[in-house]
Length: 264
Ligand SMILES: C[S@@+](CC[C@H](N)C(=O)[O-])C[C@H]1O[C@@H](n2cnc3c(N)ncnc32)[C@H](O)[C@@H]1O
Image 1 (tube, rainbow, N blue to C red):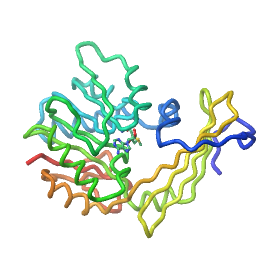
Image 2: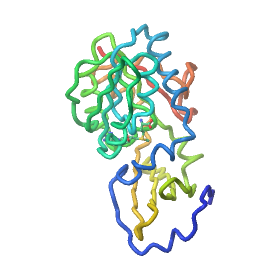
Image 3: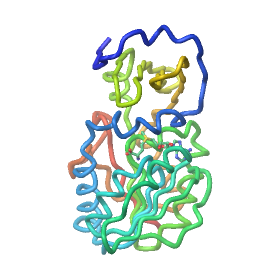
């Protein structure tokens, strides 16, 4: 087991409580993700929108904003932002963000299966394997239909997907432990090839408690073509499939791909 933990005795806790994904993880999420260069992600999405798809910087809506870090960097690049997410603990963390001067940053709790009650947006984003949390194709179809309601004609939707090769190579049987400010967590991964489901179990150990909180995250690993077809059938014209954080073509050999699709 890969261990970045300074803590000891995590297994000594006497209580175990199962909680929904991103309930307890929310308070530790930014530290868990501190290896991610969100500034580079924001710059990539901004370039894609402005340079590749001729968008003027306007309103960007993140459908799975998490704790809002990506939107912070997009706001610094000149976008007004709306961040929504199904997890209210994640959105609560995001609400602590102070918008850059002159920029508007709004937040709300909405699932992919709802149409967010927001003004029309120029750019929609749904990144870092978030759409993979939808386990059924019908739900992915609902997501695209909802996105179509709120992204204006001439706008752009950027959605990424984690691929099967990523699950097989990096998330099948790995285990890691990390000590954080205020707690620790252990993550165990398993990929079910038959069901195409990625299982990640997070055991979360807040300091000063005798309880371990367990979050079982499940993500469906879709074929890229399946999602492109669903997008087409539900109001979007996919324009490009990019290889992770580049403008090279992405395919099933990429760890992650970004679909850039325009509402029609
Ligand atoms: C891996 S995190 C990514 C968060 C953020 N995009 C980032 O890059 O840090 C996945 C996010 O998807 C959200 N999510 C999962 N299922 C969802 C759903 N059905 N509707 C809306 N958000 C969902 C989670 O709450 C979580 O914030």
